[in-house]
Length: 170
Image (cartoon, rainbow, N blue to C red):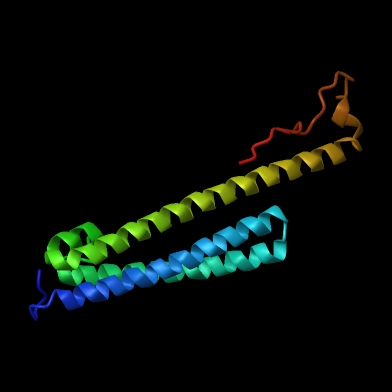
């Protein structure tokens, strides 16, 4: 499909530039998430906080590039930015303009999947670590409370939560 000036290649190149920039940002996000994994395993809280702030900023930049791509795609397709998708854009382009955008889109989808999976691994690691810390606190403080081991009636029905001590390692 051609724009108002009969030029789809120029607009397709601009859309590709947005996707390429987003790919670069996603590669940076992957690096940050992998650095976060390392910081989590050594419990470097200062680094974890710094990486979280950087990830937050980078996520905003990725979102902004996605919006710019959708706006450019919407101009080519002739729809609103919310309805503009890569698939719709590809179907509206001349065949020679499709291949680079399709390849870039596949790479970007792979990066996004890796980001989501690695973030989930990090979340699970944090959940498990918090569980272990809760268990440690429960064990350490449980020994100092007389009712922790025996209830008022001496029947062993102490209050508080029992430690989980179940490994959820990933």
